[in-house]
Image 1 (cartoon, helix red, strand yellow):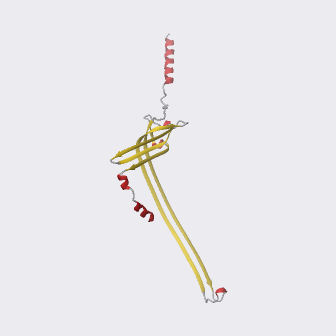
Image 2: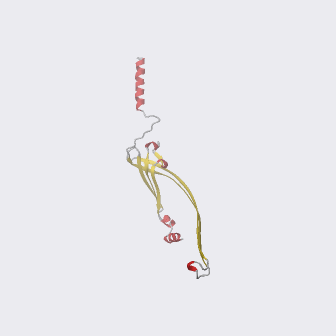
Image 3: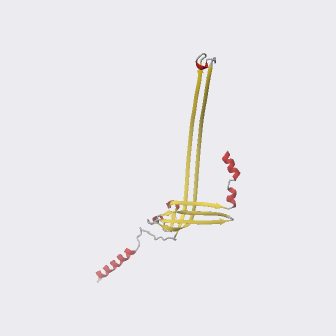
Length: 185
């Protein structure tokens, strides 16, 4: 009887354990319309330098001694052309940008491989100034953390955009005459 009870309890524990999720597999079930928090952490830096140097010259001349050929009526004839051009240029450009923020996006599609296509927009308006943040891209389910969040650098085909509008943004824009002046000079 005692061995029968141990065998039954062992069977029940094994049956329950087979249904319990593993500590190492956290496969979440996602559906279209679910939301995922995106931590936007983007940083870019680019440097470029260019140096050019060119030189071009040409020299043509004609000397004719007196009494020879079709120019015998000219006592001494000498024609010459010298020309040259040099150019040297240097240029350097640097660009650094950083973007940090948080936005919640919806799952709009799940592809055949199980990847999640997400899209989200957030609009914040303060004192007539509006800032619109959008994020789109493809997320692997295994990149979604336990708190249902993902970092922007884990989003494939990511499109992250921040746009603003309002009086301050308008005042900060370069005017048409300044653009024309900069174009000419």
